[in-house]
Length: 221
Image (cartoon, helix red, strand yellow):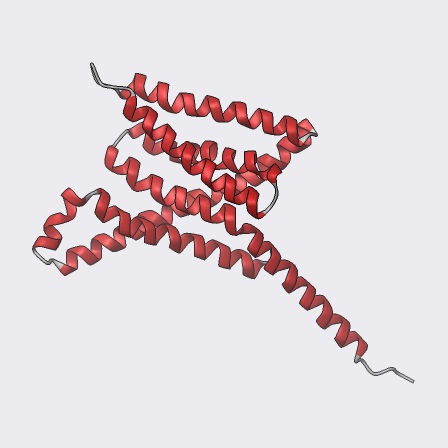
């Protein structure tokens, strides 16, 4: 990817995370921010929105670091196992383990006496469904072999990016953070081929321009 397209990719993902958090933040923490709207406190609404956007920027960067880390991990995994089918099998096992841990470890750590495990299972199912839908569209746009890798990224990497907030177990922050993470991860996974294609086109144009310039140089006698 060229520097110009990488910057476009970076800032478009950054602003997506900021806007998603700015919008969903008011909805998720409505009980906290409702007085600003009932009292029409424009200053408080604006400053809160800016703060939420800043939070979104932060987790957008976390998402991008996780994405590029996964690109390295994916190539590393292919190099070790030397078979896409074997590497996919390993990824499926890791997906199952991480989803199990998301439910079991959180339930063991944070569930109160008599509390149902269903909300913990529901959270894992939500992540899995988003991952499956994203992986389906990724495979449809590229190749069927990318399905498992896309699912691994959307499930395992998203949960790892979410881990600091999961450990705190603050419900407001749990949902405030997961939406920008998921949105940015989906966006990066689906639009990366577009920016790679644009980069290839840019390089082709530059190469053509160099050829034309060298062809137009006057021949010295």
